[in-house]
Image (cartoon, rainbow, N blue to C red; front, side, top):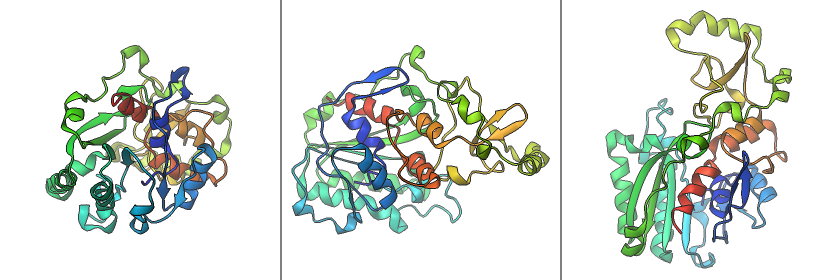
Length: 310
């Protein structure tokens, strides 16, 4: 559910190469995928043999879903995001925040052996800390032993400081007893922004901010902490869905070359998210690519979670 362009699904299936490391195939196949965004699903269907359907999850006919052992999904997180403070966080009172109930409904009807749900760190504190216990309780009442952990993608071979809550539910208590969240990768496997920046993008004038934008940012930088130029020797700060519209006067990560600033290209953003270069995004516009990439779950992070489950 909420498959987007397929970051979770690629991590689930494995069988890809990223920054010289092979992420072997996992013993899972996808039998059903759904998302309501026609642009994301176009990207998804360019990359997976199994085709995703474009549909509102509230309209799924649960009886018609094929047999499955595991339900996965990053339910919409705008309502829980720490950055979405304007309007203030509504948490589960917002209609989008209610969509996790659709996962619960399917769990109650079909009882798969496992489920994995992913969300932003802000879900832990949404509604003054009331939303998350309520969500966990709904999953338990669906018949699952539920665990959760906040994982930082940079500790799993992804060149990005991206913190996400990974909730895992087990139908059988013995499965839950055997499970441990994945261990962090060795220091030698840590990846940084310099591993994924592409020199040819330095020559793409369309990626650079105008002199006027830079001058405006510099005028207020001291008191506003803007112009977040990233270091090549560290993982990048979290990239978001509005990469196409990023500004120097925000907390968005940007790249500085000499005295000039530029945004990341879609392929660089995909690399920051740990998508292999073989993953295609080019059938939609650049702004749609940025949005799909920014919303995705890093495939390498998901691969480590799945790898810990079998």
